[in-house]
Image 1 (spheres, rainbow, N blue to C red):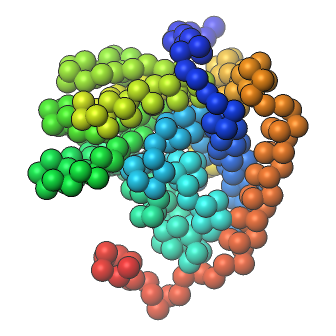
Image 2: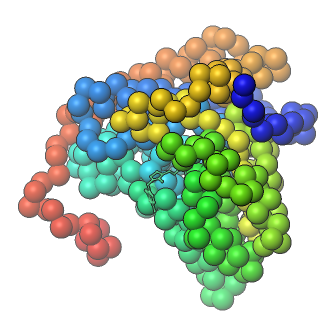
Length: 344
Ligand SMILES: Cc1ncc(C[n+]2csc(CCOP(=O)(O)OP(=O)(O)O)c2C)c(N)n1
Ligand SMILES: [Mg+2]
């Protein structure tokens, strides 16, 4: 017997997705999935070291949210499960793969590895290994946009910040402190909880007195939204609203996206705690298959078009591996370079 929280229903007629937008979302989700599958293969071949946390199953959230932003202008902060957020934010696959390989051409110059993707150019504020560590950083980014706009009179400072974290992180004190501050100061930020039901081996419902995380927004007089995180259209609709609210100076939003990771917590996790029934329930809701069906039903794509996208992405990922493999290691003489901003 599995008891699953009822997924919120969404009326797809409430949002218009053009063909170009649909294909872009599809391509981004396929990129996320295929990249992670390749990453697993490379990890098991010994090409990368340390913990590696994959995002399979959660793609609708990264694509649905980040593709509602202005790429390269709005800020994104992530967690240790950060490869796909980086890709959606526009960091080239080859730079993400090279970072995983610890190479000097990686987006963090080979200093970070899997959990520390960073790109100033793409306004990616970083992956963070400590649970909830990105929440105050993202809140600070939102504060500086508002401060530049209102206190310093820079009308162009209307950037929105998106802060991703997990259900486990929502029990950390930083979550409550930052939500309070963001609501009080009406900061242009969207907190996105990717509730995949588990924090390593701890079931969310066992660790949390009120498991419906979106409801916690109300105590800060913040808008809280629950969304089916396996439905990219629903996620994108919620994101568009939250971005508009933030951009208009009307303050933050907490989006709780209900989702599931299709693999273990990390590639070192034998994934023995989660039941087969639960995995099947969520596996049947694969966001990529589901969105493909949406695109066919609405004549927004043909099977050939989607196949072409998949082939293009496959080639891009093969290229990324070649690039990572042939890139140099960071030079040991530069060990302490890039620790401080002035080393740029
Ligand atoms: C401050 C801190 N405490 C504990 C850990 C160990 N830890 C790593 S991941 C994790 C679970 C977090 O789960 P969740 O926030 O739901 O994210 P998910 O892995 O499901 O994406 C824990 C406890 C850590 N990295 N940082
Ligand atoms: Mg979790």
